[in-house]
Image 1 (spheres, one colour):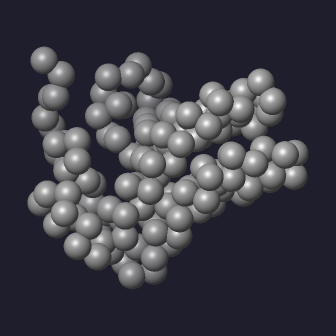
Image 2 (cartoon, helix red, strand yellow):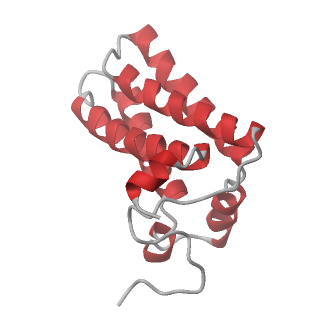
Length: 147
């Protein structure tokens, strides 16, 4: 399935993944941009952005040394309800940055909120968990991608 077909699929699991990846990029970039003025929220944004990538892009766990405890935690997040809750907590923290004047961090908060809502809809509709073929690695198991 190509990118356009994925967008037409109506699978909110895929939409949640796209929004989460966009959020990861925005959180890392905006966290770096606001690092001087909002140190705590900027660091949280960078960490949340990195976690979004680890959760959504499964092959990152294969190339990064992680503990079995961390791997089990990420595996548990394959459930739509848990991803919804996880991203909702991220969104709440980022939205709270507005109280401290972290204006541009609200962009990351908005995108992570949309990702959480997509996973909520996928959970309510009981849609199958799918992964994007955007990276050419649509959740294949038992395959090594590192040469």
